[in-house]
Each structure stands twice: as C-alpha cells, then as structure tokens.
Length: 463
Image 1 (cartoon, rainbow, N blue to C red):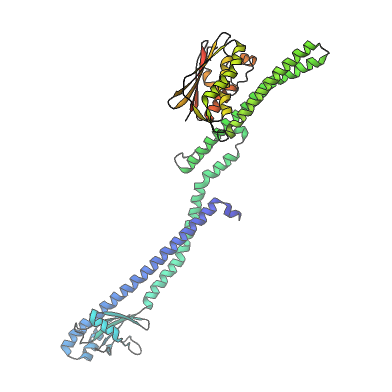
Image 2 (cartoon, rainbow, N blue to C red):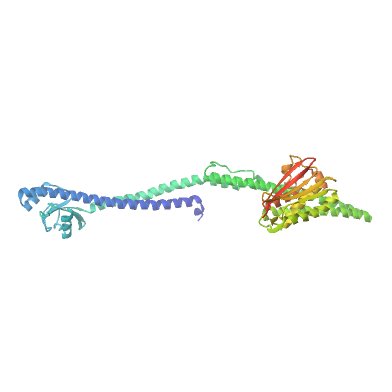
C-alpha cells in the first residue's frame, strides 16, 4: 500500500488507465472501420469481375447464339485464379463455371436474382462465400454472371490486424507509462524539493525561503505563496518574541520595586509612618502592575477574538463621550489641565462594543492629560464627517517628534521612555486604541508638533 501513497505512482496509474482506455477505443474503432473498408472493397472488386464476365459473355452470345458455348468460351479465356466465376440462366441454374469451383456449383437464391434485375447488381453470402450477381443484359433475359470469393480472405487480413493490435497496444502502453512516470517525477520534483526545504525550516530559521524556479507556473506561484506565509510567520513570531520580551521588561520593574520595598520594610522594625510610606509605594506599584496585566490581557485577545467576539450593539456615541469626559475630568483637575468638550453633532449611533469604545476614548484622554504640562489644555470634539463619526482629541502637550509618530501605535513604544515610566505608562495605551478602532472598522491618525501638542483623529462608521 505504500506504493499507492506516492503521488507519482497514482498519477502514472491514472495516466496509464486513461491511455489504455483511449488505445482500446482507438483500436476498436480502427478495427471495425478497416473491416468495413475491406468488405466494401471486396464487394466492389467482385462486382467489377462479374460485370467483366457479363460483358464478355454478351459479346460471345451474339456471335455464337448459344448460351453454353458462349459461357465455356468466356470462362476459358478469362482466368481468375483466386475467384470462382460462373454464368447462370434466368432461373439461376449454372450454365458454365470456372474449373476452380470444386464440387457442386453454388445455386443463386431467387431473391438475389430479383434484386440484381432491379438494381443491376446484388450481393449474397453462401457457405462462407461472398458472391456478386450481375445481369448479362439490362433486360435480364440472357442470365447472370456471378463472381465469388471466400470471406476467409478478409478474415485473414483482420486476423493480422488484431494480432498487431494485441502486440502493439501493450507495448505502446508500457512505453507511454514509463514516459508518464518520468514526466510525473520530473514535474513533481520541485514539490519534493519544497517538502525537503520546508521540513528543514523551524522556529530558529524562519528567515529561510523556498527556491522558486519558475514564478509563472503553478508550482512557482505555490512556492511564492509558501514564502509569503513564511514571511508572515516570521513577522508574527518576531512580534511575539518582542512582545514577550517587552512584557517581561515592563513587569520586571514593578515586581522588583515590590520585592525591594517589602524586603526593606521587613528588614527591621519601623514606625507607623514608615510602614505607611512603604505600603503606599507598594500599592502604587501594585496598581501599575495591575494596569499592565489588564492591558496585556486586552492585547492578548486581539489576534484571536477581534473583531468576531465583539459585542456589537447599538450605542450612543454622544453619551459614551460625555461619560468618558466626566471620568477624565478628575485626572485633568488633579494635573491642573483644562479639559474642554465640543459636541455640536446630532445623535450618533454606533454598532459596537460600548466597553471598548469607552476605553478607547479614555485612553486618548488619559494620554493627552498625561503628556500635557500643568496649565495646558486638552479638548475633545465629536462631529459627523462624511458619514462617519469623527472624534478629535487635541492637547497642548510636549508633542511627538516626526521620527516617532509612525511608531506611537506599536506595543510598548514610548517616545520618552524615562518620562513615560515615571508617569506610569507602559506603552500599551495607544496600541489598544488602534486595535479597538480597527476592530470597529474605523481608522486613526495622529498629527503632532514637538513642543506645541498633538491631535489624534478617530473616524468610526455610524448609522
């Protein structure tokens, strides 16, 4: 059974089967066409011979005026070595016959005689003899000339043809099958090479690619598709490794602070105020650690659940914005930042996940407040623009350098790493924002000038 597991073997067998059926059909067609042609030529030849005898007999009869004498003279002069010729009267009784007719002469049926009178000729088969009957005169009163030949003459030719087919078809089939196997092996050799190369590719060498011999044929396009898949896998694997490394780095700092502060607090007996300071620091780091873990859990859902697992329900975007502004107002007051809202749009209804939409808006507001200096200003504007809901969060903060703007939505990316860590950021907020926007079929863009502030524009489809 292992032999049939090979694609080359199966292709060769299918090729041989189809070719065998084609050859058999062709041989049968040729055989019966040849048989029909052989029999037709035999009839034409016998008819010509009979007409020759009839013409000669008519001339002799005019001269001799004797049927028997005319018949004997004609058959004595005309020699047909491999054929039996005779002359019969109007009733089909033989008048004269060639000497090679052994035994009794062949009687001609009356139906053949009648047909010969009507059509000018007729054919009949008697005792394995094919007989052509031709009237001597057009009125049919001078009798009939007949020419006969054994059917075995034709059968011998057909027998040789069958023998040639029985010997030739298997040989042709064998040679064609060997050629088919060679072609299948040659055609499938790129797949064997691709299989061998693919088996050698592992997580350690995802940068390897398959050889593309001919990018225009099916196998070349298949290899190119696999190479594209390997590129996506390499990018995904690299992103996963980078994500794990960044997550480990972000988690290491608060854990180190928690462990260090706990060890210091337990090192010796301290006053109540000192314990309160230590617990306060531990609480802050624990809250930071909790936010990082929550953000990591949210991003971990991204490639699997979104957007299929989103709870798509009608929600008022105006109310969601108002709720988020009220929550962010606390952060703005604490930072000494002014928070303004512009909402002149009519009711905007969005089909989406209300919790994620609010988190997106809060992340943008929190990010704007966090990087705006005391006395600065943050504004949020909600409007309807070209059939979309447009949310613009603008601040007068420190801004983003042009080189960093294309990367602000990358995971764990921070423009000012030291300042971001001091403010409690892990570089995940804007990544979550972009994921939520993409999951709802929207788009987000950023415009920023260093030292003057930034503007994040979100467009979402609404009903």
